[in-house]
Length: 113
Length: 115
Image (cartoon, rainbow over all chains, first blue to last red; front, side, top):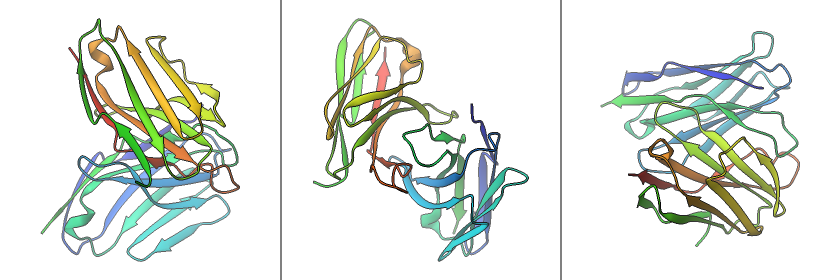
């Protein structure tokens, strides 16, 4: 089955700096890669996703890149703000069915004002 | 209320108790899921229901028993749990459409403590 590894497990950055979270996956058939943000005591929420036919996707201050050959994808947050502090989960799955979405172990991001 | 609602938010139970977790989604989705979230572990898929039919049982112990009476409601019946079952149990739903099935909408979870 699919295995997703995520690094780092914790990340502290100064407000205004950039943050990068990296994930690798094992199943070359996976073609859908979402990122979820979970603030303390709240539900995980989808913040951005990318499909395997695209190498990069941006949405304001967040972007995701995908390298299919190397089987890794990354989340980039620019101009970080205190409200970006949360746990971020990457995931991988095969799109199109009620398949398993395999999650990484999460990265706790702390943005220091 | 919109979105995915879970009750109760917190639950403490003894190992001999029987309790149920409830999930309701108001998004018109067709698939519903139970996930287990433990500290420093990935979210673990437990069960998947598609149009009320169970399509996935991810080797979950029989002390967890799901029930899906319709596409909007999902239950997780608990009995004779173990302390290691203490975790946050998250319900999620997704839409049966191209490009929608993988996008999960989560509830706020039930924080379960087994004593």
